[in-house]
Structures are given as C-alpha cells and as structure tokens.
Image (cartoon, rainbow, N blue to C red; front, side):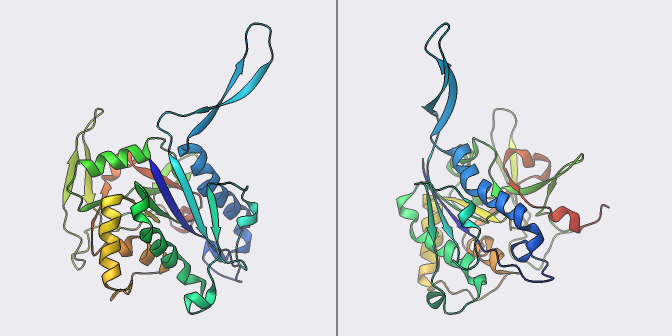
Length: 289
C-alpha cells in the first residue's frame, strides 16, 4: 500500500499553559512522542525488518535487512514552524519530509492554524495514495495489521463510513484508558449522535462499530475513495467551514469529516481491535470514579 501521513507539530513553551505543546516540563515527553509518531510508525508499518543471521556453522553472526510481507510504502509530511519545533531530534529519513509553513501564507502568526493546513494539504494529495492519514504528533499505531484492517473495513461498507480508532493511554499498573469516551446518555443535540451501528465479520468474532458521539481521536485514516469525497466537499466550499469544534486540532481532524462521513468507532469493549496509542499522560488530569 502507498500511504501518506500528515502530522502537524508545534512546541512553543508558554508559562502556565495547560497544553502539552506549550509545556516546557514536557519537552522530553514530547520529543519521545514525536520520534515515535514519525520514526516509530515508519518502523512498524514500513517495508523492511532485520534478522540476525550467519553463513553457516562456526561463522560470524551479522544483522541482515529483509523486506517485510505486508509492509507499506509510507511517506510522512511533518508540518512544523521553524521557530517552534522539536524536529531536529528526528533522525533524517527519505520517508520524512519537513514542511515549514510560511506564516504570511497562513495569514497570521498563530500556530493554531497549522493543523488545518496539514489536513488540507493531505487531502489535496489523496489521489496519489491508497490511504491518507492525519495524525497529531504524539500517536503510535502499534497494530502491525492496522492498515490492512482499514482497507477491509472500507471494503465491507458503502464508503459512507470513516472508521476511527480509539485513542488510548496506558495507566501504569492498571491498564489502558480510552481518551475519547462518549458522554453518559449521549448528546441528542448533535446531528451525528444517531446510535447507528455497523457489524463486520471477523475470524475471531464479529466486530461492532458505533457512530461515535465523541468523534475526535486525534487522527483520521481514509481510503482513497473516502478522502476524495471529503476533498471534493471542501474544495466546493473553499475550505471554509460554517461551524467550529472545540479547538483547532478537533477542527482539522474529525471536523473535516463530520459533514461528509459517518465516524464509526469500535464498541469500547472491543477497543483493542482498532486503536492507537497516545504518548502523553492526559489521564492524570481526571479522577477515578
């Protein structure tokens, strides 16, 4: 598969900020997250792996590179301003392109516009790839079969559904926590809170997806036919929305999908089937029930 991943990245420390991208104390955590969201995802889902081998009995053991069955041709575009970035900590790679947006192009010096720019540029290139992915700069796709699952899910539907993973963090000594939980009782005021479900056959048991009340997962993954549909919708509107979600990351992610596709997530009890790892500690902000 040919895959394009667009990642907006800003690290701009501001005193007393509650956001990880502005918190100087989280610099080492953000460096690790950025390395894993770029190099880590390339390693897990790219074409190559290594094996310890030798040329026979009593010969020297060496490390050999091999091509992985099911590996993908991946390109990552990192959208990051030169004055507010941790990109120098990433190892250079032909698969990672650093794009420094010109602030005069953005029309202002607010870094908050970079996520939407990354999402727009991604969709504009959709025709050249089998799958396009928008991801925040702290997500790791651990499941090596993630992209194969995505294609399968899309093939089982009519193309009207965007299959979104649950975004999870690990709580030491406890387990995973799903960050994008749905509010108790739902939100009947939201047009997409329909309760709709979709079941797909799977050898280890059928998987059920529901139309998520809380659509944001910090990312989206679209097949070519889905991405071209979203691109066409926004081209007709010159990329201008008549609504605004809770923040620029939400607007650039699920916000571009909501008017076009039904955002479907696995039942929370089946979250392991389709999930991404959030490399932060947002779980510390909230008490246990």
